[in-house]
Length: 264
Image 1 (tube, one colour):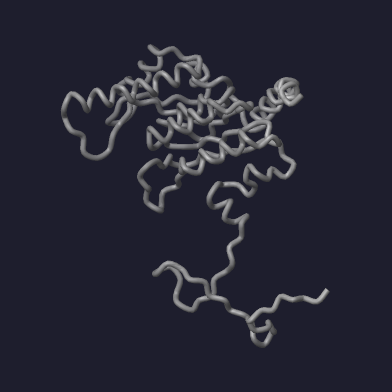
Image 2 (cartoon, rainbow, N blue to C red):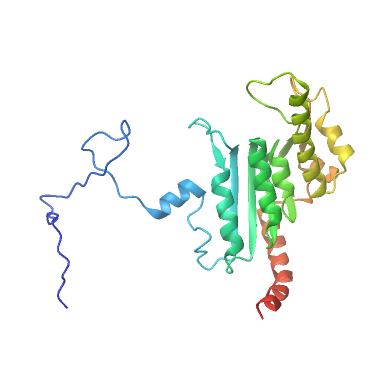
């Protein structure tokens, strides 16, 4: 069959290479400079932290969800900050839930905390996933990272990882009226209820860790390491990546007969 497609672009020759220029925002690329075409795999790595999105697991039945850096919520953080955007995490969880090829979700957590409501939204989404979920705390799972860590079905923490537990704090202007303090208290109660309902720690023990003085400089709260986090009941076990994957595979195997009955 004859090729009916005709292009007005000049034919590429070694003596006269093509040099296409795509429009870019002002100040980013000099006018007339060559621009490399966008690679979908590279964009997926930059936007979501992994090369395969939930729609194309490439034969893998486990979806890895990394939550790294600071949790970015309704306000955009400075570009030099390493962030996890909650508007990226939520669609990934929805896609993982809907994709029948994905049987389990592994959450890798290393965060300093961040936006409280965005962190709670991520935690609620993970807790509502119907497929087996296992979380692994590496390095640290601080502040609002604590609810995210305990939201999975089973949680691991490495021996050297830490978790900082402290009250909810606001940045910027705070109006010193009774309603402002009531709002802070209600937000704090939301965090406490979620953590205590998704872990083995009791509410009095969690509040005691949260309001402890003298351990953190110019602040109240507690910094717990891997074994202490398990001892308090925040995390289920001390372990690493291999332990987390084995536990997730075990839960997937237990879930398969139930899933097959639903399909039939």
